[in-house]
Amino acid sequence: MRHQLGLDLPERRIGLSAHDFAQALGASDVILSRAAKLAGAPTVASRFVQRLAAVAGKQRWDLALAKGARYAALARRLDETQSPLPAKRPAPKPPFEARPRQLSVTEIEDLLRDPYTIYAKRILGLTPLDEIDTAPGAADRGTVIHDSIAAFGKAFPKQLPGDPVQALTEIGERHFKPLAEFPEVRAFWWPRFLRIAQWFASFEAGRRAGLKNFEVEIGGRIEIPFGKEAFTLTVRADRIECLSDKRYAILDYKTGAPPSEPQVRTGLSPQLTLEAAILRQGGFKHIPAGASVEELLYVRLRGGAEPGEEIPIAFKEGTPDQHADHALAELTKVLAQFADPEKPYYSLLHPMWKNHYGTYDHLARVKEWSLTGGASDDGGDE
Image (tube, rainbow, N blue to C red):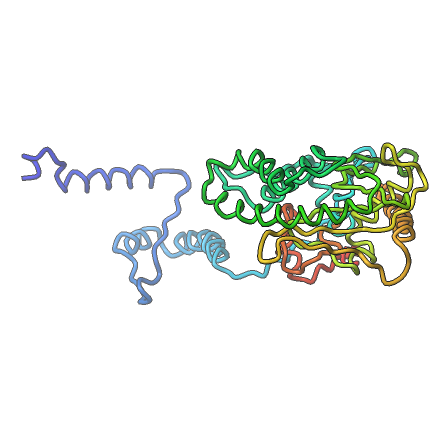
């Protein structure tokens, strides 16, 4: 029947297997192995192996077994359990020439909390790519809302329109247009933006009553010593207001949770204090050096049950000017340290959350070295 169907006969396959075995056995080096147990039960060597042992004689067979014991030992090592040593906290030390000469105020927080992020992003030049066809996320929502609020301020710098809510809604429509291909995202975000527009119109009317003028999306920069060279600190401030007494207020819009007063005061979230320092150093166009800052204010825009919220940074001690000067002095010290080629860019030096993993933490192997609590021989746990 197999022959009629054009299939090989069993005898032919057996003959081919025997032929292949005979050919392989004629090689100069041959390893014959068998299972010592099958399903937990000891096995008996095949008659071929027993016959081979009888023909070889005890002396030559024992020598062959001794040679095979080496390979058997190597095979057993594959199944041995070992306790691998976790990697140490990375501490890269790039040369002075490779170290960045410019950072924004938002990147300074990374430099203080997680220097490895600056190493990966600004020195190695590693930029994460978005996944293909990814729906917009929280960062995109923040960008759309920021851009809409900024466009409203630029469109009406002197006087509010007759219907500010309608005007802001029309501006928001233009910025939300790219999200048309994500109807589920727009359906969730757009009602929140409408609530933000209602709240912001009232907020804007109250703020402008005590202002001489204001600017939005204003860029600024100052230079700080960096070894024998200069380091440029840059910023694009969401909003800077000139008050009626010629002092200034610095506002930053947040769609997420803003930093707390202790985080700002201790310097771990220095964005607003460094913006104030740039202002006091004359780093913003049209603002004279030595100007005074009266208020640092976060404006939280959520669009939920509470659409917006003013969160001023009310320092327990000192004035915004004093904290601005202190933040700049501390940053100058930090930059002096990083100008030394022996200063490493540690991973997660002062993390905000113990269980939070950032963009480059997989490269820093955080989940591996953190098993030891971050300790390392070179002081990386400071």
